Image (spheres, rainbow, N blue to C red):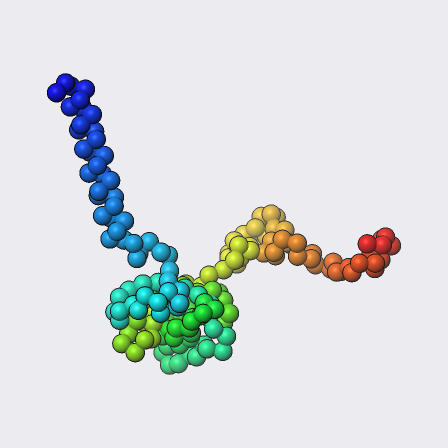
Length: 171
């Protein structure tokens, strides 16, 4: 075997070992790669009690119940299934019914998701109060920050077809 053949054999063997190692790692992490599971996915997978995972969906309107010592129960839904969640702690400021949420924890034997972490999801228009205050102080604040694109500006009037605008032009 020449030097060139030996070198190619070593490189080929190393690439094969790396591919096998990557395959084993991905196989071991296949359930953890997903950022969160929805209630429907949890129902379909028949997740065993005690197995930690992230649950994501919308807080079902009317399901939020506050108890003693910061205990909270609510349901997370994804349009197909609902899963009851129990959490003890301070909820994020953006947490509310109808809002997206990701909770981390495990199912108990009765099928209730016992969360030890709750994260409220927000859309792209969200801006923390501290950032907004800083922008205002620096003079960089625009009144349309935090509004969806195409939203009316303050004081603007929605015009229907055929109505006259303030300038008198017909739309």
